[in-house]
Length: 113
Length: 113
Image (cartoon, rainbow over the protein chains, first blue to last red):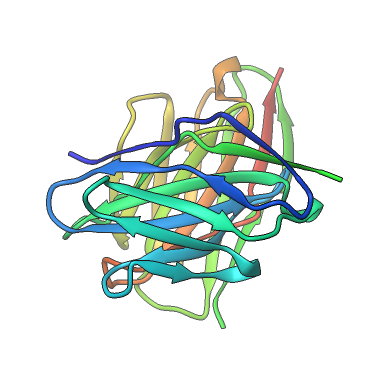
């Protein structure tokens, strides 16, 4: 079985400040981890993924995420938030051999000017 | 490059009427295909997935059905809509490697009155 937790329904941050959106996971075997972003009334867009290798993964729009195996976490980060980053963010996980991802409930990021 | 289309973009239907939503993918072959429903702008519920023509797996028992008549075409149907079928329906595809990210369509907003 696999599961994903996004403990915060909403994250508020001021423009220019660093942001973190949290994600923890549970899988059997090696995890394949993903972050997606969704703007209002749009489909999800892929941001970045961790499969293997370097624990720090860089993705689109200046986002990055750090894989922490001991804490089973994959938090999304950005050094300096933009108002345009305001959106809904989803973490997702596969376990090995599965074609079915498990998504978190989503975290609404609000960046204040 | 690959693209994914969904139509219609919005739909308002009376309770008890039939439904047909279509999803097509271009620029790839033999993709895994998925139908999700998103209620109230939050979590994704996997409804159906398909690994090949005519192969449909249902994740949630309900009055919806899916079909895959061609390799890159995925259809979501209902014979009689319920009020609870209202939501944002997303189609997605994924390549054959298990660690690939999903690519989502623009979505269909369905309102059942």
